[in-house]
Length: 224
Image (cartoon, rainbow, N blue to C red; front, side, top):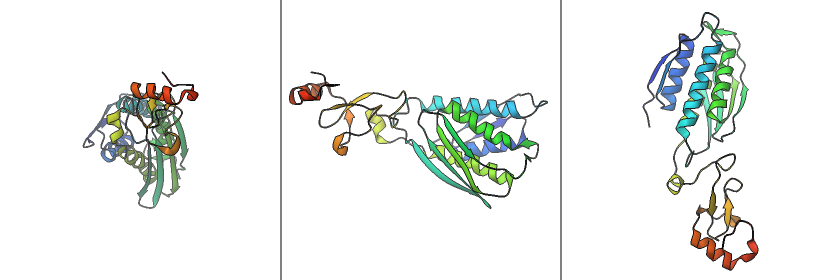
């Protein structure tokens, strides 16, 4: 796991602070050099960095084989408590229930926190729920959201099924044929387990042939 080193320069002090926390607590090394139209406002730079980091995460996930899809984090920051829940699903959805008492933290517009999370979520291809349960300080609220995401990303792990080429994602584009111990073939894009909840394993052509002889009535998907 990476040490979480950040080399960030966006020209927006508070935003740099949030990205530094994201790197440190996720243990993901992040290097960002942004030269945006800050003479207008911080919107475009914040959104563009979210797009770039989301795309980087999606590329790093690759086929998502062996990735643990779900993580749920409660992140305290002094008087504030936020909940961040992630599903590495391949389906970008953001639910963002966060209210800021103040419009700005320093010169940074607090509404841009949502803009960053939206850009990140869409481009990473994840389902992300962010909710501040309570809090009074806008700085603390934003920080708990970024730290919560960082810890949710950190919770991802490779499990042993990666060695067998299976993906934890069973919907969307991550689809492959597998067979179960009863020799029936299932489409992992539709089913995650076999009848009887037996653990599936990679398809074996010889087992398929045996299945076709023993269970000709199965029909669809069975190859002789």
